[in-house]
Length: 486
Image (cartoon, rainbow, N blue to C red; front, top):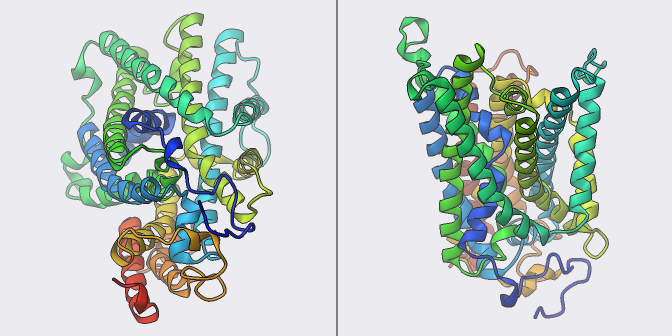
């Protein structure tokens, strides 16, 4: 029981999870990851790296390494959720301050809104393809001004948006049940799709024959590393979001073993498997249809009769829903609850998330492979990497995983700092973002002339931001808060 929590900082959603409600097993954690990983962006991820010049095994190795790297901060931040039962916004109060915690939680929530929009676009595209396969080109037409998509695509996008809100209306607890059911279904569908491609294409040879551009000689020879490092940073950035707010889920785990083993089994293995299915099936489509079809929503309309199309697009819809409801709603909803405890609700946060997901025009982010990797994935990894460095440095290196839980819900004491904000954390955050800022501005065309050093730093954005922010935070806390250093 908390001692005299401040009502302005407390709500049932933010309160520590009691032991009797920590019921998630290793399977539930792994199923959560399977449900989040099996989605269209994962399916197309290897293709984006191949588009940049890699062959299939180079792309798969990059994805594996990226996910093994991000698994480390994922399980470390997950430790706090399991040990203390607190969600991400409450954990950030220890390092950023009671009021300063809004900075990282809102930043994380805004990125989730972007991902929500991307996944909603994917789900809407599945509906668009289903209508096209069953009723012909009734939704086709000229692109709308500003939007850059036609009216039929936009209506399908909005329809899928409404379906998600209807599901989210039932609340957070449905995620555990839904993911546990969706995970095996999605794996089976993925393996069936891979088997279909193998048979129709005539084996692995035709499916995986695309060579690496970096082994063909000419001007690209020897430039593999110039693509590998930004690709690796992008792969880390893919789940950099969840590496921060993973306590939102591990607070429900029965033990540290369950959260660590569940994540290790669910994240890197499924990422590699499903991205491999994506590149193998895409390559097979060249043999089967005479052209590469990298978008599974388009492929679903080409692989068979009406029943096959319906089953395929249903699977895509389940995959998109399982990712969106877990990965892209919980964090912004909790950030909004943290802004107004006792007033904001989970569904209210979901509505705000979904509205932002429309405004950002997510289809424009998703349709350009270079912009997707270099601008979106790397860009937000430059922003969130420093937050991860600060959280881990504070929790493990300064506090040795011990927290004053009562003080996390009070406007006084250990985490009040200066007016509720820890200036050391804010300075460390800016210091971590700053090295990558010129490179980001160059990538979006805001700066024409940027020194090569800053372009290079941008390709390592998550690593640079994580390391710089952690170092600045540790140094600053030793000077300003020597009492908390053990």
